[in-house]
Amino acid sequence: MSQLGAWIEPHPQGIYVPAADIWIDPSQPKPRALVTHGHADHARGGHGEVWATPETLAIMEARYGEQTARPVAHGESVSFGDVEARFVPAGHVLGSAQIVLDHAGERVVVSGDYKRRPDPTCAPFEPVPCDIFITEATFGLPVFRHPDTRDEIGKVLETLVANPERCVLVGAYALGKAQRVIAELRAAGHAAPIYIHGALQRLCDLYRDHGVELGELRPATDTPKEEMRGHIVIAPPGALNDRWSRRLPEPITAMASGWMRVRQRARQRNVELPLIISDHADWDELTATLEELRPKEVWVTHGREDALVHWCGTRQIKARALALIGREDEDE
Image (cartoon, rainbow, N blue to C red; front, side):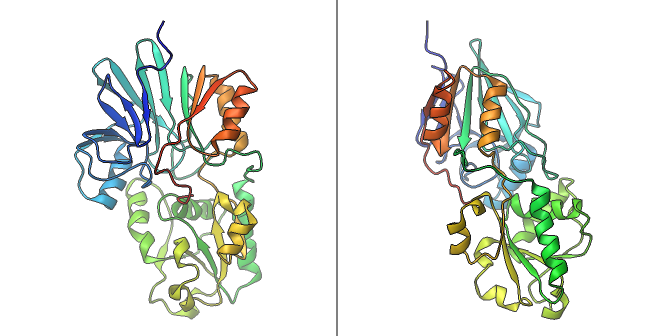
């Protein structure tokens, strides 16, 4: 009897499926790549052909130029010889997908990055029972338990009300986090214009083009300081403490990231208002997902692998760490 998942080959640069001659999220250019989502540690330029959701392909084209694109919508399947690949929502960012592989009577699910809590900017995670679940573990330690997103957004609005002569400057990564923070603010009833750094404009426009409502956004660059008093400004994390931020009216610096749970990270960035808002599953979501799916094996691609592998062992689930290269935490 062959080993479970013998037709899947993990390599440092990605996951290879020889029977289909396809790579999943390869970190180097490959002739045929299936891509789970648009973050740069999963989506690279230079591939021969790329299978991904239409939203992910649009993000890749915005970042890398024209692709030899093979769009696959959520719920759709494509066959590569005897291997069938189906794309289902991962709940991470716009267009993010898990890739469900069926071959020789076995099912392997490659999760990419994912989260389980609601997000107004993307389709929610769809659980798919499988034999092998290939998961991330960015926040794979019990200390990482994310609070309710509404409470974190409430902190921004309360700070704004308490400081009408200042602005709240929120650092958020350009793809996914910035648009989610804006959409969550709108859902909380904040209808006022939100000012954004120029580096966010292209991807905010892309999200709108794909049906995500963000309300009125105004460019922060070259806007008079007085006009931004009492308003929220969104910028990439790198702009929080550089010359660009000096044009703002006494900004109260916030940062939206799951890493804001770690106080030292907040201090390093001079963040006054840490916002624990994550686009990755926390410890409880990771373990609850494994309990729900009940796979025979768990393969962990990156993150805090050891703790999750140990947790699996205590529940008689075979698990291994893959240690894929090029997977970064900082898009969080």
